[in-house]
Image 1 (cartoon, rainbow, N blue to C red):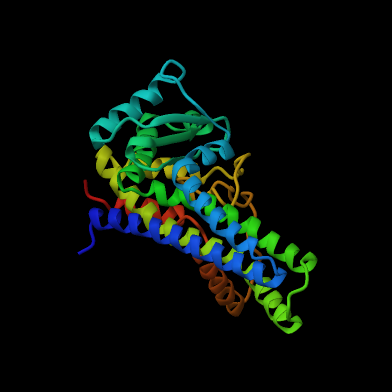
Image 2: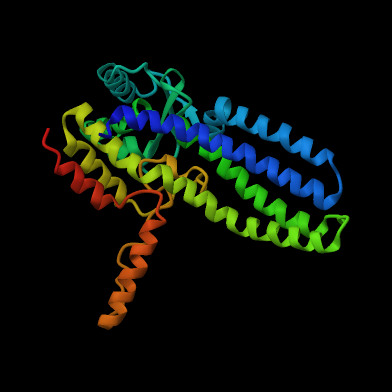
Length: 314
């Protein structure tokens, strides 16, 4: 039967699997370029590069995420209430006190990052601390500490670096195919070029699928774990409702980091934009489109998460 411990072990296996696949893909691409351009040194460079990227992903991805988000460390004196909440809940959860960072942004949001519980970070936006009361803030912090305790953070943080690299790689692939040199066989070169273009077109979709594979279920589990930690699920439920009501995107966010946050950091459609009247067939088609769109969201709908929290009997 699945449990929290099997989830933790699964995250570790997924992390090593993802890094191994990345290693293999980069070497395969290096082989392609070395063959197409007739330069064997490219393959050796790809091997070295893939090793370095995996090392950077494991040891420095949290620092990269914090830099990309514009987060800065917070001292106890700067926000004593927030510091005390994190410290008290960490003790309750049996976790070391994570480093605490703040992002100067009015959009309410938060995330956890790091390679393990001994090297973890919790970052919250200034908007979150201003919008939520203490019970709600405790719910959000408990959710993020649950990501640390559930060992979600290494996997989700490594994905930031690898997904970012996939985006750069797709651009490089397309450029290299157009300005690259001739291969020893024009027919082989044409086939290789076609494969390269297809991979470059598919790579953003692959990156999205990687994010989706790690994001949705872990949010429900962190919600439930956080509710058990505070013994007050309504605190997190109300916090999610307030966060979901904010329609503006964060100032510094990208597709690579979006899955880290407790809620979609790109905001929501402007309020008051009611859909036009449509026929029954149009409504059915619209419902199908909505279902497909939901599949490609990095976060479960807020309403589903709130409903699940309020169904918990604690």
